[in-house]
Amino acid sequence: MTKVPTTTTTDVLTGVDLSAKLVLVTGGTTGLGFETVRALCASGADVVLTARSEEKGRDAVERISKLVPGARVSYEILELDSLQSIRQFTDRFIALHHRLDVLIANAGIMAVPFGQTNDGFELQFGTNHLGHFCLVGRLLPLLTASAPARIVVLSSGGHGAGDVIWDDPHFEHRDYSKMDAYAQAKTANILHVVELERRYGPLGVHAWAVHPGMVATDLGRHFTREDYKDLVARAKAGGGELPARVGVDVGASTQVWAAVSDGALDVPGNYLANCGVAEAKPYATNVEAAKRLWEISEQMIGESFPEP
Image (tube, rainbow, N blue to C red; front, side, top):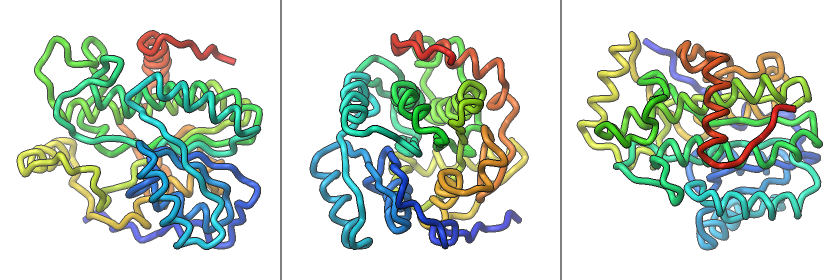
């Protein structure tokens, strides 16, 4: 039986002063993102969260301000399924901020019906990977100038259900599988971190991929009973089992740990769970695959982020 995690964001941040740090958290209006913003604000960080609408952004800031009086928190509009929105956001962010200490790529979607982003990418790969790939890439100069800096990318144990579908990532020539699409997006998140660390670790910008566990959020709102059975079967086929569900304060603890702890600096570029290094599938940590993914991601979004 797998041990149920109990470490919370509050545990991770006890005694930590983040008053000199600027943190960007994508998808900070609900679930893990909201708890991450709350916890970081409680430790004094200046946090910018992204929201998909003005209404959601204002609401999140109001709720954070009530939970953390005096919180330094603001919001910006960002749609990760639109390259235009990402580019507009990063241009605004760079114009407004002279530094960025931590970027937490938290936003994402899971097991959704087939769809495409505004730019024609399969929705899960386009949002979870390509959207963050473009966002991070455009902010890398600011992160590098702010070094030491950190990048935390939310992945999932669901990456174990499948590799990147290299010959057809957007399901143009095969039947769509929401779980295969989710698995390849989460594998891509880990590979993104592997290449980020290889390129930018020597410059003091370190990166981690994080599995938050089975968390009680609305991320799985598109899940059906059959989807859940499929998930259980995939876990068993991989020699494991689904972990117990935990609350957002526990689920968000690992991404907060990666963002602030000294311990994370001992294991840069790794896949994390339960506030420590976890074992990812070999295909998700393959250095050559990470380089390949970076190159094809640049081609897909039509933007290049040259190796420093």
